[in-house]
Amino acid sequence: MGEPATLGCSVCCKSSWNQLQDLCRLAKLSCPALGVSKKNLYDFEVEYLCDYKKIREQEYYLVKWRGYPDSENTWEPRQNLKCIRVLKQFHKDLERELVRRHRRSKPPRHLDPNLANYLVQKAKQRRALQRWEQELNAKRSHLGRITVENEVDLDGPPRSFVYINEYRVGEGITLNQVAVGCECQDCLLAPTGGCCPGASLHKFAYNDQGQVRLKAGQPIYECNSRCCCGYDCPNRVVQKGIRYDLCIFRTNDGRGWGVRTLEKIRKNSFVMEYVGEIITSEEAERRGQIYDRQGATYLFDLDYVEDVYTVDAAYYGNISHFVNHSCDPNLQVYNVFIDNLDERLPRIAFFATRTIWAGEELTFDYNMQVDPVDMESTRMDSNFGLAGLPGSPKKRVRIECKCGTTACRKYLF
Image (cartoon, rainbow, N blue to C red; front, side):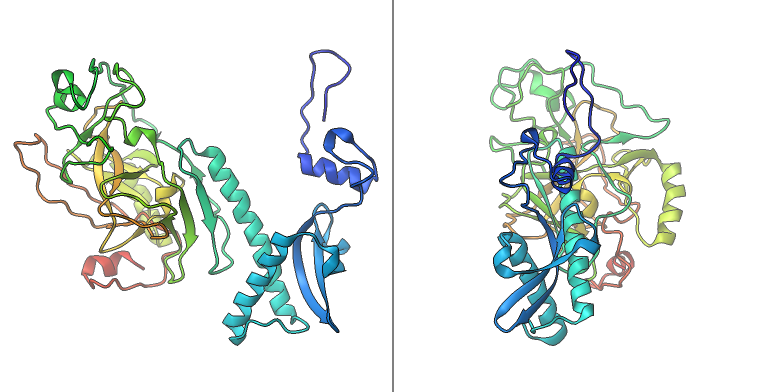
């Protein structure tokens, strides 16, 4: 909790700051270090509201107090509550559920037990999602923030998902670091020896705004950790990570979780990478049989030159884990090489196919096909194939795509 008398020695406390404050108030003890004084000793925090009733013209709320068991819940008149945000959220949830159940928004004088129980579950779910959101943002290494929203059902955070920012290398696989880098003064305007792309016999991928200018199917070679250029080099785009604020949200049409952007994304801009655990194709085949029985899979074949490795984002992944399929997607896949030049192990990057407006869902085609690449512009064939369906683990309700193709009917259920 604090420093003992012995100089230079400290002991970590297993209780959180809020828990310690609650303990002080329960014991009716003031503690200046925790901000608990005689003035605010009897100020208690509302965790959530459990019920509502109206007697004459006075509104009352059943309060769950933070740090106290349910047995200590109390009915409080509206004027005793200073939690404006909690009150607004309670009435928003109440009105939405009343409309869904009874097609009316005005609350009755008393709530039936089923409705009150729903509001409690919704409050608990929202707190769980808030904790998950905090966890995701604590783990992310990229600039773009992540928010989480579920206004559709009572599903909480995925039970088995660990957020990572880059590939997690599976057993028996080695990522060899690049041995050389460019010596350019300006990689865009005055590249030496064609810079990193030219050294690999490929074209420079970006314009001065960081927008990809290559045809889908052509590889992207970015500057690496051994290059002389700095962080602001125009040939460093994917490696800077997600730069847009994105929201993981619950879809209202049975597709589980999805992702939407909270900012405008310009056409041809980098949006995110598909990140997961790199495994061998043999291991992917074994896991794929298990995933098929579960009704969902997150296997993405790295078959740029040959089908040897696969990315599995089922357990380890980033926000791309939640991106859904569309037959008319707004994201396009590119193979990217930075610190590892093994052509069997590209990084998978999504770029915007058009302007994507704030609030739009991000999607890509799980059965994506790219046009054959001109052999004069690149010396390799490039085909993108999905071993499985990266998407939401709840895609068990059959959804027919507008295109009605066999592939989409197969994938989306």
